[in-house]
Image (cartoon, rainbow, N blue to C red; front, side, top):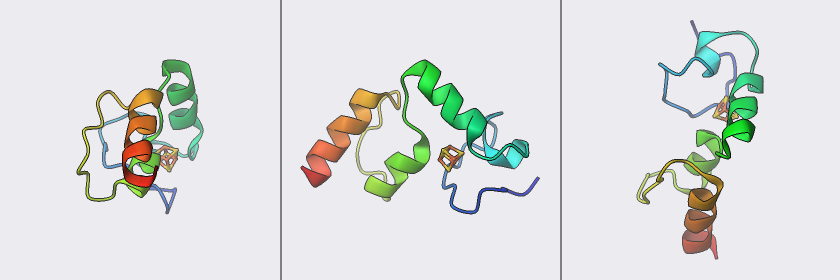
Length: 72
Ligand code: SF4
C-alpha cells in the first residue's frame, strides 16, 4: 500500500501504525506514541536527518537530548 501521508519519513514499513499499512493517516502513530511516551520518527528525522545521533528508544527524553545537542 502506498504511503498516504506524503510528509511521513518513517521507514518502519513493518509497523502496523505506519501510514503505508492503513488509511487513517497519522492518527494510529500519534496515539501509539502518546501512550508509550515516545516521539514519532518524523520528528527525529527532521532534527537529525542523517541519523548521526543515538535515538535510544525513541522516548521523549531521547528526542530532547538530540534537540539539545543539535539545536541547543
Ligand atoms: S506522526 Fe507518524 S505517521 Fe505521521 S508523519 Fe510522523 S512518523 Fe509518519
